[in-house]
Image 1 (cartoon, helix red, strand yellow):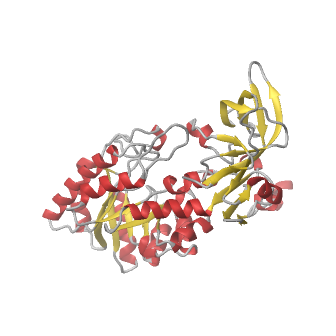
Image 2 (cartoon, rainbow, N blue to C red):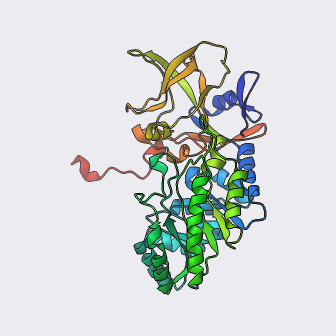
Amino acid sequence: MHYFEYKDNELCCEEVPVRKIAESVGTPFYLYSYRTLARHFSVFDKAFGEFPHIVCFSVKANSNLAVLSLFASMGGGADIVSCGELFRALKAGMDPKKIVFSGVGKTEEEIQWALKEGILIFNIESEEELRKIDSVAGRMKTKAAVALRVNPDVDPKTHPYIATGLKKSKFGIAFEKAYQQYQEARSLQHIEILGVDCHIGSQLTEVSPFVDALKKLKELVLRLRKEGIDIRYLDLGGGLGITYDEEKPPDPAEYAQALIEEMKDLHCTLILEPGRVIVGNAGVLVTRVLYNKDGDGRHFVIVDAGMNDLIRPSLYGAFQEIVPVRCKEKEKKVVTDVVGPICESGDFLAKDRALPELKAGELLAVMSAGAYGFAMSSNYNSRRRVAEVLVRDDRFEVVRARETYEDLIRGESIPEWIKT
């Protein structure tokens, strides 16, 4: 559920017409609904009830400070993969003891910073990383709390680019090698083993892959406990999908019930890393039509947002629903490619989409853009990254200003000798 709906034939975010925001801040821009964000987080968290759990929002999905601050105020933590995300999470007021550090390539600087801040746990991806963290912790005269990310080789039935739990994936430690790796971890002086971690993929629309992964992790947890390794946390990652088109993902209550049933006798705190399921349908990208163009058997609508602003359609062939900000349901539909101004053939937001006839100046909303939208945007073609706007009830605020042209060259310099 989300709070983007038509009122008097105008698309509104909560109580604010999208058109009014566009008139104030210009286009393109990302627009988030406070009410949707809060509701989604609350529904997900409450689905697990009294079962011991920590909701560590996946910062990579949407790293805006206002969004992170909202989740922190609701008791949420963070799943991070860089020092930049750690910096953002702390600035947003998140408790370090609710921060887990994932990712395959943690640098020494990142490890030091995370240890200094006292995060809850490092999710370890390889033996070399484990030994590096032990070494850094030793120099800092402390211990690093860790979980090993175990690759359960479960098919998540999602796009190959976002499937992370198969044997061929770069992520995690093979399930068959995990027990031995835990024995080695126990031998390290500056490592404290706290948990087991896995993440099988993103945009999953079935519960069964999560349950299959959890069953394999349970086997490992019970075996480790027999060896005296006290596993207190089980991190099942994120990955629960949303509806972009015709997908019918399980709701959080069904997801939670299945996990709790499988874990009820395990006596572990469950760590969850939701991202898309919380923010995906809570945001849209608003763009303006620049031109119409007819090609050889194709009709193009050229808009002012491009693949640098929203790369999912170009990168994954992902479907994003596109709707006019002014309702035109009864008007004639035209099969249209919605494309941006970027100098790449892959610069499109939609292909072969039946849309009302559109004129230059009209506004479109690209729906379900709250996850992996702005977070994956870039300055390609020296385009400024867009504004982000948050609505609550009948008011709105720019929570990230549109970049200036000076921002584009910040940190660059021209050597004196280049002209000689």
